Length: 159
Image (cartoon, rainbow, N blue to C red; front, side, top):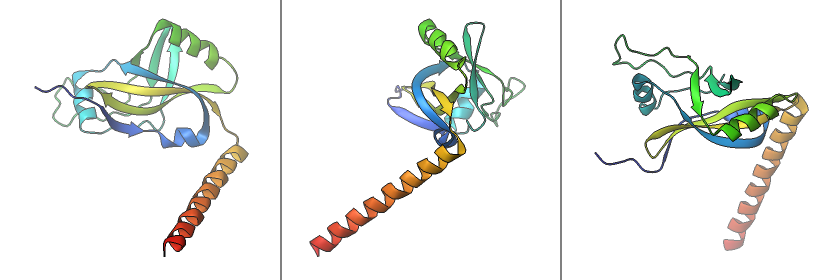
């Protein structure tokens, strides 16, 4: 059997980048059961309501939906169970101290396979206010309009 190489994206949390200022990101391994891995290999997962909590010196991923494996039997997993994250002690301690600060949280950004192993990208984030979200959308729209104007000018110049 050939070993997998590269990164295969399973799920992404686009809303997190809209709702939070991303301060720092980390790549973590996951402790999974066999049916969870098979379900993830089918590309089925949702990070929409997910968050990370530090409990007893360990990092836990909560509310990430990995649907039950269709061919699974009584050994199937529950869809929203909490899953342990595999991180270095220094990273966990740093995240725990930072997340204690007001307005800071830890959210999952992406779930993917890297060289055959399931990984999750988590971020230390600070919640955005409503006006920050509008400002971000306005900047994105302005950037798009500027790009369109530049490409239109280049097309005109070529002709």
